[in-house]
Image (cartoon, rainbow, N blue to C red; front, side, top):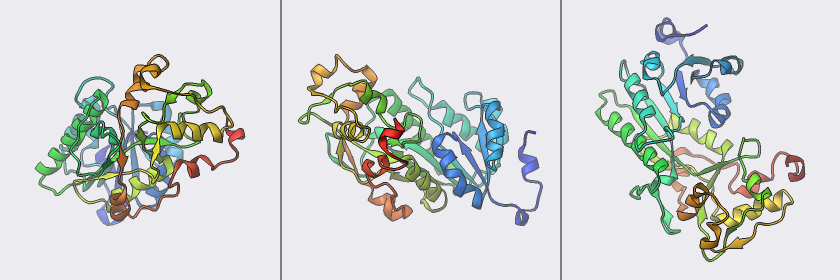
Length: 314
C-alpha cells in the first residue's frame, strides 16, 4: 500500500507523532532509524520497490519516488517537520540536480522546520595538512566536491528565502568506515598489496565511524543550529599510510609498501590518486560543543577493534 501526503495529515496534530523524512536511507540512515523511530513517524523515500518490505519491518513508512524523476516527488510537499538528506549528488556534472528537485518538491507546501544535509569535507580541497575549521572558505578541486558545494549553496539559498524560518545543518563528513559496512574498510586494497605514499609525502586523512555519524545525524535533527556547518569526524590525526598499515595489522596482513608520489601513479587508479592530492586535519570541536556528541570510536583503532577478532572478519 502506498501513502500520500493527505492521508498522513488526516489526524489532528495533537494525535500525531512528528513526521521525519529520510532521503537517501542507506547504511548511515539505517543505523539512525532505531533512535529516530522512538521520537518520530519516519517516512523513507525509496526508488526501489524491492526495499519496501524491509523498510516496513523496521517500523518506517516507505514512499516511492526518485530524485532523478522530479515528477515523482510531489508527495513530499508538506510531508514532514524534519528532513534528513543523505542522498549523493549525480555522478556527472557540476550541479546537484537531485537536491534541486527535492527542494522544489518541498516548496510546494509548508516547508519543514529543519533540514540536515550530509555533505563532504572534500569541499575544502587541498589544505596542505593545515588544521581546518568550518569557517574556512570552500575550495573544491574535484567534480564530486563541486557538486557538494552546489548542494550546500542551494540549501542555504532556499532556507534564506523561506518565510517559515527553516533551520539547516550541513554535516561535512570525511571517510566513513565500519567493519560491518559494505566497503567500510580498505581491506580489499590492503589484500591486493597496493602501495602507499612515502612518509615524507603522505597526506593527512580523516575518518568517522558509521555508528558515530548516525548518532550525529540524529542529534543534528533536533539540536543543530540553523545554517551551521559542522565537521563530523573523529579525533585521530592520521596520515593515509598509517591508516592502511593499521588495517593491515588488524587483519594480520603484510604492511603496504611505501613509495614516492611519482612512482605510485603506476600502481593506483586516477580516482585513488585523487585522494592523495588533498591533505587536511579537521577541527571537530564544534561537533562536540554544538551537538554534544561523545564519540564511541574516537580513532579508527577503537572502531576496527570491535565485533570479534580481525581474523574472523576477513
